Image 1 (tube, one colour):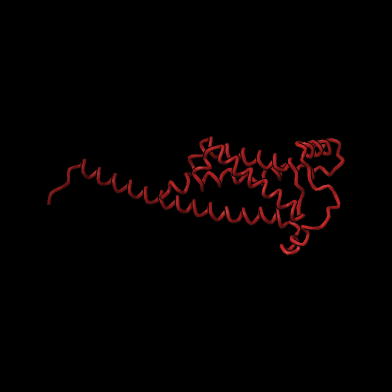
Image 2 (cartoon, one colour):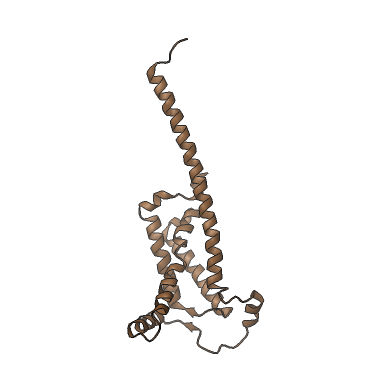
Length: 189
């Protein structure tokens, strides 16, 4: 019964330790990815509830509303009109202070999670142009759905704030050390 030389024993132990850490790392990555998928599903349901189904209407009722005449102005295509109006209302207290804050902050936060989810799930979304175009398309789709289904107003300021929020989250998740916390799912295979 011979003994292994010390350097071979140390190498063998290091290799086994590295293998164990690698297995734990792979397991943790899969767990993290599963948690991200679950959080994405929750985000989609909450976003749909708040942005499209917030008035608890049935979808069939929304479809019936499509042809009805509008009784008030339900669109704004002038950039910053609504934002300036809310800032003025906040300053002169013509509205309850919570209304302007909820609207501006809510619009900033609404699409922020996409700054994390899109680059996480789609490698091409790590590029700024692809991300900005995709998020812009999603926001425009939501704004048009709200307008057509009569569940909200079509407002360019909503678009501006939604896009600003998504871009802020994108910058934090892709341009800072936080980027190292995740890689895209395609890299995990």
